[in-house]
Image (cartoon, rainbow, N blue to C red; front, side, top):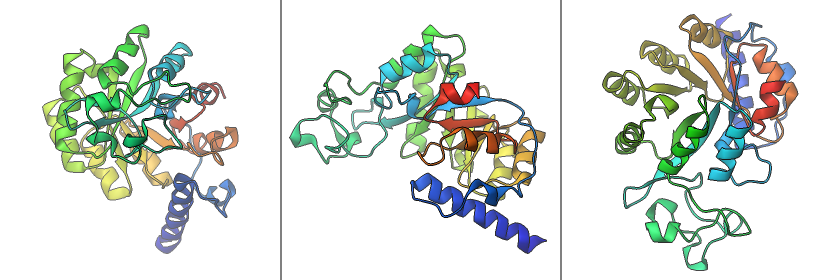
Length: 279
Protein backbone atom coordinates (compact mmCIF):
# COMPACT_ATOMS: atom_id res chain seq x y z
CA UNK A 1 0.00 0.00 0.00
CA UNK A 2 2.83 2.39 0.85
CA UNK A 3 4.45 1.73 -2.52
CA UNK A 4 1.16 2.37 -4.30
CA UNK A 5 0.63 5.62 -2.38
CA UNK A 6 4.14 6.70 -3.31
CA UNK A 7 3.51 5.99 -6.97
CA UNK A 8 0.23 7.90 -6.88
CA UNK A 9 1.84 10.88 -5.22
CA UNK A 10 4.70 10.89 -7.71
CA UNK A 11 2.26 10.72 -10.60
CA UNK A 12 0.24 13.64 -9.29
CA UNK A 13 3.40 15.61 -8.63
CA UNK A 14 4.60 14.92 -12.15
CA UNK A 15 1.27 16.09 -13.52
CA UNK A 16 1.32 19.35 -11.66
CA UNK A 17 4.98 19.95 -12.48
CA UNK A 18 4.16 19.64 -16.18
CA UNK A 19 1.08 21.73 -15.61
CA UNK A 20 2.86 24.50 -13.71
CA UNK A 21 5.60 24.70 -16.31
CA UNK A 22 3.10 25.04 -19.13
CA UNK A 23 4.33 21.86 -20.82
CA UNK A 24 2.02 19.58 -22.75
CA UNK A 25 1.17 16.72 -20.40
CA UNK A 26 0.58 13.15 -21.45
CA UNK A 27 -1.86 12.54 -18.61
CA UNK A 28 -5.48 13.50 -18.09
CA UNK A 29 -7.49 14.31 -14.98
CA UNK A 30 -8.77 10.74 -14.93
CA UNK A 31 -5.29 9.65 -13.85
CA UNK A 32 -5.90 11.30 -10.47
CA UNK A 33 -9.28 9.86 -9.57
CA UNK A 34 -7.62 7.90 -6.76
CA UNK A 35 -7.65 11.07 -4.65
CA UNK A 36 -10.72 10.56 -2.41
CA UNK A 37 -13.80 12.67 -3.01
CA UNK A 38 -14.72 15.18 -0.31
CA UNK A 39 -16.49 18.50 -0.11
CA UNK A 40 -14.42 21.70 0.14
CA UNK A 41 -14.69 23.68 3.34
CA UNK A 42 -14.79 26.95 1.43
CA UNK A 43 -15.32 28.05 -2.16
CA UNK A 44 -13.03 30.76 -3.47
CA UNK A 45 -11.38 31.73 -6.71
CA UNK A 46 -8.15 33.74 -6.69
CA UNK A 47 -7.33 36.13 -9.52
CA UNK A 48 -3.90 34.99 -10.74
CA UNK A 49 -1.54 37.98 -10.96
CA UNK A 50 -4.47 40.16 -9.90
CA UNK A 51 -6.08 39.97 -13.31
CA UNK A 52 -9.15 38.52 -15.02
CA UNK A 53 -7.05 38.34 -18.20
CA UNK A 54 -9.55 40.27 -20.25
CA UNK A 55 -7.10 42.61 -21.96
CA UNK A 56 -5.57 44.41 -18.99
CA UNK A 57 -1.94 43.68 -18.04
CA UNK A 58 -1.07 41.47 -15.08
CA UNK A 59 -0.15 43.16 -11.80
CA UNK A 60 -1.58 46.49 -12.90
CA UNK A 61 -3.91 48.88 -11.12
CA UNK A 62 -6.58 48.71 -13.86
CA UNK A 63 -6.58 44.90 -13.65
CA UNK A 64 -6.95 44.98 -9.87
CA UNK A 65 -9.73 47.55 -10.10
CA UNK A 66 -11.58 45.47 -12.68
CA UNK A 67 -11.35 42.28 -10.62
CA UNK A 68 -12.49 44.05 -7.46
CA UNK A 69 -15.41 45.71 -9.27
CA UNK A 70 -16.59 42.27 -10.39
CA UNK A 71 -16.57 40.91 -6.86
CA UNK A 72 -13.36 38.89 -6.78
CA UNK A 73 -12.37 38.42 -3.15
CA UNK A 74 -8.72 37.36 -3.44
CA UNK A 75 -6.22 38.90 -5.83
CA UNK A 76 -2.78 37.33 -6.07
CA UNK A 77 -0.03 39.83 -6.90
CA UNK A 78 3.74 39.59 -7.31
CA UNK A 79 5.76 41.99 -5.18
CA UNK A 80 9.40 42.94 -5.66
CA UNK A 81 11.68 45.40 -3.90
CA UNK A 82 13.86 47.81 -5.81
CA UNK A 83 17.38 48.83 -4.91
CA UNK A 84 15.84 52.05 -3.58
CA UNK A 85 13.72 50.03 -1.13
CA UNK A 86 10.40 50.70 -2.85
CA UNK A 87 7.94 47.80 -3.10
CA UNK A 88 6.19 47.38 -6.45
CA UNK A 89 4.17 44.85 -8.42
CA UNK A 90 5.97 42.93 -11.16
CA UNK A 91 6.17 39.25 -12.03
CA UNK A 92 9.20 38.75 -14.28
CA UNK A 93 12.77 39.16 -13.09
CA UNK A 94 13.81 41.26 -16.08
CA UNK A 95 12.34 43.47 -18.78
CA UNK A 96 11.66 41.61 -21.99
CA UNK A 97 10.76 43.26 -25.28
CA UNK A 98 7.95 40.79 -25.93
CA UNK A 99 6.14 41.70 -22.72
CA UNK A 100 6.63 45.37 -21.99
CA UNK A 101 6.93 48.71 -23.70
CA UNK A 102 10.20 50.10 -22.38
CA UNK A 103 13.13 52.24 -23.54
CA UNK A 104 15.57 50.02 -25.45
CA UNK A 105 18.37 50.73 -23.00
CA UNK A 106 16.34 49.13 -20.19
CA UNK A 107 15.45 45.89 -21.98
CA UNK A 108 17.04 42.81 -20.45
CA UNK A 109 17.83 44.51 -17.14
CA UNK A 110 16.80 43.02 -13.81
CA UNK A 111 13.71 44.92 -12.80
CA UNK A 112 14.61 45.20 -9.11
CA UNK A 113 17.86 46.91 -10.05
CA UNK A 114 16.14 49.72 -11.94
CA UNK A 115 15.86 53.10 -10.30
CA UNK A 116 12.49 54.59 -9.43
CA UNK A 117 12.87 56.86 -12.45
CA UNK A 118 13.65 53.97 -14.78
CA UNK A 119 10.67 51.96 -13.51
CA UNK A 120 8.54 54.98 -14.23
CA UNK A 121 9.50 54.70 -17.91
CA UNK A 122 8.28 51.12 -18.20
CA UNK A 123 4.81 50.58 -19.62
CA UNK A 124 2.87 47.34 -19.22
CA UNK A 125 0.58 47.81 -22.21
CA UNK A 126 1.24 48.39 -25.93
CA UNK A 127 -0.49 51.78 -25.79
CA UNK A 128 2.00 52.95 -23.18
CA UNK A 129 -0.63 54.11 -20.69
CA UNK A 130 -0.18 51.70 -17.76
CA UNK A 131 2.88 51.82 -15.52
CA UNK A 132 4.33 49.60 -12.80
CA UNK A 133 2.30 50.18 -9.61
CA UNK A 134 3.73 50.42 -6.12
CA UNK A 135 2.44 48.09 -3.45
CA UNK A 136 1.06 51.13 -1.65
CA UNK A 137 -1.03 52.06 -4.69
CA UNK A 138 -2.23 48.46 -5.04
CA UNK A 139 -3.33 48.43 -1.41
CA UNK A 140 -5.31 51.62 -2.00
CA UNK A 141 -7.50 49.80 -4.55
CA UNK A 142 -8.88 47.71 -1.66
CA UNK A 143 -10.65 50.80 -0.32
CA UNK A 144 -13.41 50.30 -2.91
CA UNK A 145 -14.39 46.93 -1.41
CA UNK A 146 -15.04 45.63 2.08
CA UNK A 147 -13.89 42.09 1.28
CA UNK A 148 -11.15 42.25 -1.34
CA UNK A 149 -7.79 40.94 -0.16
CA UNK A 150 -4.34 41.02 -1.74
CA UNK A 151 -2.54 37.69 -1.74
CA UNK A 152 1.11 38.72 -1.88
CA UNK A 153 3.64 36.49 -3.62
CA UNK A 154 7.03 37.88 -2.63
CA UNK A 155 9.46 37.37 -5.48
CA UNK A 156 12.86 36.46 -4.09
CA UNK A 157 11.41 35.65 -0.67
CA UNK A 158 13.68 36.93 2.11
CA UNK A 159 13.45 38.20 5.67
CA UNK A 160 14.17 41.72 4.45
CA UNK A 161 11.40 41.65 1.85
CA UNK A 162 8.95 40.10 4.31
CA UNK A 163 9.66 42.70 6.97
CA UNK A 164 9.38 45.54 4.45
CA UNK A 165 6.06 44.16 3.22
CA UNK A 166 4.61 43.81 6.71
CA UNK A 167 5.82 47.32 7.56
CA UNK A 168 3.94 48.91 4.67
CA UNK A 169 0.82 46.84 5.41
CA UNK A 170 0.83 48.24 8.94
CA UNK A 171 1.55 51.78 7.77
CA UNK A 172 -1.38 51.65 5.36
CA UNK A 173 -3.70 49.97 7.88
CA UNK A 174 -4.06 46.93 5.61
CA UNK A 175 -2.59 44.14 7.73
CA UNK A 176 -5.97 42.41 7.83
CA UNK A 177 -6.51 42.91 4.08
CA UNK A 178 -3.54 40.86 2.95
CA UNK A 179 -2.40 37.26 2.77
CA UNK A 180 1.36 36.70 2.72
CA UNK A 181 2.64 33.72 0.73
CA UNK A 182 5.69 32.05 2.27
CA UNK A 183 7.69 28.89 1.60
CA UNK A 184 10.29 28.85 4.36
CA UNK A 185 8.92 27.14 7.52
CA UNK A 186 11.26 29.05 9.83
CA UNK A 187 10.20 32.36 8.28
CA UNK A 188 6.56 31.36 8.75
CA UNK A 189 7.13 30.60 12.43
CA UNK A 190 8.98 33.87 12.98
CA UNK A 191 6.38 36.15 11.42
CA UNK A 192 3.55 34.19 13.02
CA UNK A 193 5.00 34.88 16.48
CA UNK A 194 5.62 38.56 15.67
CA UNK A 195 2.33 39.29 13.89
CA UNK A 196 -0.28 36.79 15.12
CA UNK A 197 -3.09 38.58 13.21
CA UNK A 198 -1.33 38.30 9.85
CA UNK A 199 -2.91 35.85 7.41
CA UNK A 200 -0.33 33.45 6.00
CA UNK A 201 -0.45 31.13 3.03
CA UNK A 202 2.17 28.37 3.27
CA UNK A 203 3.38 26.96 -0.02
CA UNK A 204 4.25 23.35 0.68
CA UNK A 205 5.82 20.63 -1.43
CA UNK A 206 5.41 17.58 0.80
CA UNK A 207 3.76 16.25 3.95
CA UNK A 208 6.66 17.33 6.17
CA UNK A 209 6.23 20.95 5.13
CA UNK A 210 2.47 20.59 5.47
CA UNK A 211 2.83 19.36 9.06
CA UNK A 212 5.00 22.38 9.83
CA UNK A 213 2.43 24.72 8.28
CA UNK A 214 -0.39 23.19 10.32
CA UNK A 215 1.69 23.54 13.50
CA UNK A 216 2.23 27.23 12.66
CA UNK A 217 -1.55 27.74 12.39
CA UNK A 218 -1.52 29.22 8.90
CA UNK A 219 -4.82 30.20 7.31
CA UNK A 220 -4.11 28.82 3.82
CA UNK A 221 -1.97 26.09 2.29
CA UNK A 222 -1.06 25.94 -1.37
CA UNK A 223 -0.20 22.40 -2.44
CA UNK A 224 2.60 23.08 -4.88
CA UNK A 225 2.43 20.58 -7.74
CA UNK A 226 0.95 17.73 -5.69
CA UNK A 227 -2.26 16.71 -3.99
CA UNK A 228 -3.28 13.72 -1.86
CA UNK A 229 -6.37 12.88 0.12
CA UNK A 230 -4.31 12.83 3.30
CA UNK A 231 -3.07 16.38 2.69
CA UNK A 232 -6.56 17.74 2.07
CA UNK A 233 -7.96 15.95 5.10
CA UNK A 234 -5.19 17.27 7.35
CA UNK A 235 -5.79 20.85 6.22
CA UNK A 236 -9.52 20.65 6.68
CA UNK A 237 -9.18 19.13 10.13
CA UNK A 238 -7.24 22.28 11.09
CA UNK A 239 -9.72 24.56 9.25
CA UNK A 240 -7.04 25.51 6.73
CA UNK A 241 -8.12 26.55 3.23
CA UNK A 242 -6.58 24.36 0.51
CA UNK A 243 -5.33 26.28 -2.54
CA UNK A 244 -4.29 24.94 -5.93
CA UNK A 245 -2.89 26.99 -8.80
CA UNK A 246 -4.39 25.91 -12.14
CA UNK A 247 -3.48 29.02 -14.12
CA UNK A 248 -2.15 27.38 -17.27
CA UNK A 249 -4.11 27.45 -20.55
CA UNK A 250 -4.52 23.69 -20.94
CA UNK A 251 -5.97 23.21 -17.45
CA UNK A 252 -7.59 26.49 -16.51
CA UNK A 253 -11.15 25.47 -17.36
CA UNK A 254 -14.38 24.28 -15.80
CA UNK A 255 -13.52 20.56 -15.98
CA UNK A 256 -10.34 21.07 -13.95
CA UNK A 257 -11.97 23.38 -11.40
CA UNK A 258 -14.77 20.90 -10.79
CA UNK A 259 -12.38 17.95 -10.61
CA UNK A 260 -10.22 19.41 -7.85
CA UNK A 261 -13.10 20.97 -5.97
CA UNK A 262 -14.70 17.52 -5.83
CA UNK A 263 -11.53 16.38 -4.10
CA UNK A 264 -11.69 19.06 -1.42
CA UNK A 265 -9.70 21.91 -2.95
CA UNK A 266 -11.24 25.11 -1.58
CA UNK A 267 -9.60 27.85 -3.59
CA UNK A 268 -8.64 27.76 -7.26
CA UNK A 269 -6.01 30.24 -8.47
CA UNK A 270 -7.07 30.99 -12.02
CA UNK A 271 -6.86 33.42 -14.91
CA UNK A 272 -10.69 33.40 -14.96
CA UNK A 273 -11.62 34.14 -11.36
CA UNK A 274 -15.11 35.52 -11.97
CA UNK A 275 -16.18 32.53 -14.07
CA UNK A 276 -14.56 30.04 -11.71
CA UNK A 277 -16.41 31.37 -8.68
CA UNK A 278 -19.73 31.10 -10.50
CA UNK A 279 -19.25 27.56 -11.74
